[in-house]
Image (cartoon, rainbow, N blue to C red; front, top):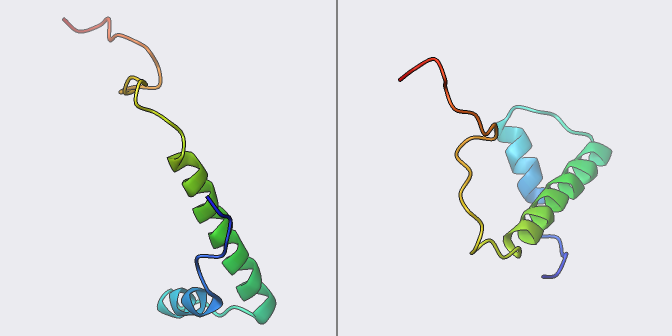
Length: 68
């Protein structure tokens, strides 16, 4: 999958306004880059084949021994 920018600075500016954040132009560029990196990473994770992976219900493979 291509690693192109999927979120524009205008969208980040709108999100910042809705969040009542004031961002300088440098911060706006950095946050736009951060959001695009996050989305690109999610695209990478979505490419992983998980068809034969069993669902994980608990990260600690423990059994509650105090209850019957």
